[in-house]
Image (tube, rainbow, N blue to C red):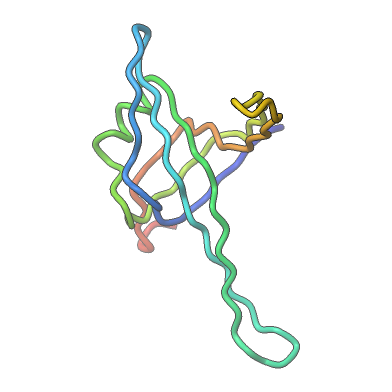
Length: 108
């Protein structure tokens, strides 16, 4: 099963593309983990994720996503590649979101 759930902060304003068949939303999401290393020092590790959403989920993102906002997403991992203008193959890993909502620490 290909399933992803992340809670993190939006890195930039959402980018919306409009097509005849609907909309596509794309944005970055930062997730941060903290741990104590062997020297007993607190270490934070932030990972950046590319997120895309289509259709009604993209429309929801258009009104919900703001830079810095804490959100949760559910979706799946998606891998794709393309050849750029320098004739180099570019590999992209992204999360295709099916559910996006504002997150509150009060939620369980």
